[in-house]
Length: 221
Image 1 (cartoon, helix red, strand yellow):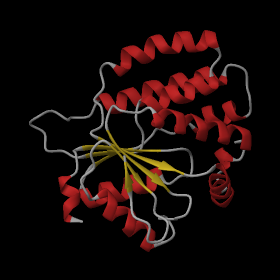
Image 2 (image 1 turned 120 degrees about the vertical axis):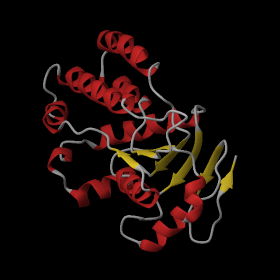
Image 3 (image 1 turned 90 degrees about the vertical axis):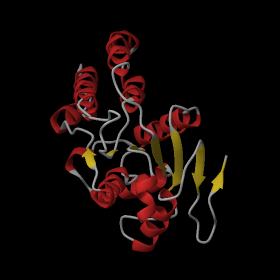
């Protein structure tokens, strides 16, 4: 894994719920001795949102946006810093969910603050986007059985997956590695983890696709 130290200094791991982004980010941070930035949890706000309480969508979304902004703004990524940062979210993720969950009037207010905050934040050098089908994510949700996630509907999960696919199909702000995790389980199977880490340790420029299906090699675009 020595080559991992050739990777950019600011790496973000992204993807829909239960795709494994937090696990991978933690592993990378440990191996790189990097600062770990974790997507904030607002369990009570999320529970109210999933339960459909009036106004809960805007309240939860705004709280997440402010917390994510505070975390990323605090990063020390200046030219003199040798720090490596591994995050399990990008700030754009917040707007992705806002577009799914807010009405037009709420979104208009949200966007004014989002655009102001985004201009002040650094952009990752590399984003690792973990994909999985809705069916696979549903199984992982059921297996995890986290209390705050029980109210997530199958329809909502499918909408989240579609939103991520659309967003990263057009993403060009950073070098991007797209990893299909539907046929692997790097959380439970060490051989899958090692295969993924070997790919991540290689130089990545532009957009690259990693389709870890048995002996199938990565495809690049």
